[in-house]
Length: 137
Image (cartoon, rainbow, N blue to C red):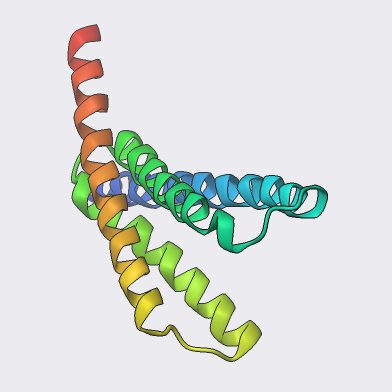
């Protein structure tokens, strides 16, 4: 009986991370498409959109952590942190295997902040999901 309970718990853990990662990458693809159209059909340059893109990246990671924490309903800091770390790992592998480049110092700082933001999102997601389930009970 205990073995089955642990199996369900680990499935929920992986599933909640997957939901967060799907949100992050879907949000990133949508934003990339919008910015590609903006850059193509307007006179805006990449440099002028840099801070907006960075802010949207933080929103995406916060939202992914929030969704992961809300699905898991416990240990939001852990689930959000793992979601942020897996995102950073995927980006690192894409950059290393696709472009043969390692993270530079600035990227390490950004991805550390992304992980921390995802952790904060996970904490908030757990607290909001837990409060909503307490109210409905």
